[in-house]
Amino acid sequence: MAITKEVLDELMKEYRGPDDLIGPDGLLKQLTKALIERSMGAELTEHVGYEKHDQGEKPTTNRRNGKTKKTLRTDQGPIEIEVPRDRDGTFEPAIVPKHQREFKGFDDKILSMYARGMTTREIAGHRKAVAADLKRFTPPQVKLPQKRNSPNLPSGGMPNTPRLLDHGKCDG
Image 1 (cartoon, rainbow, N blue to C red):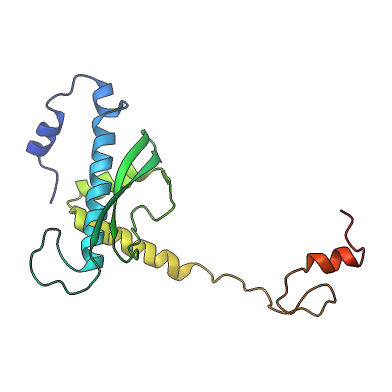
Image 2 (image 1 turned 90 degrees about the vertical axis):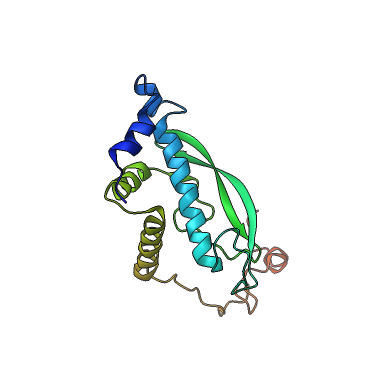
């Protein structure tokens, strides 16, 4: 779906100046919040396998479980969003991953995808695919050896502080 002239007219009908567009409560900030929340909703629908308010038989025991608030730092300033949850706690949003608080440069990317006619569900799917590609190309973490041959290290490889202090090998 492309952004039509009618949609733009509706969004801009109360435009009086630049603050209405890029100000603290401007259209870009509101649109960013709405698109993030809608994308997360679409991601959760994909994750749990059923639409919101679906009354039929559910394909899984995992269910939607409300929302939590999260404040993101964006190019327009802080935006408070509501992140949907699932009961099992296995939902990992791709558009704003868990523990991420920064969301810089998002507006240009999302608005360009939306302007090219992508729906919010398609945008969410695209973001999920990009996240999967990043995971695939990220090198695995280096694993440290579990055991070391040292009189000051127990078999697990962690320093035994009392042994170090007993033998006078600590300058503390």
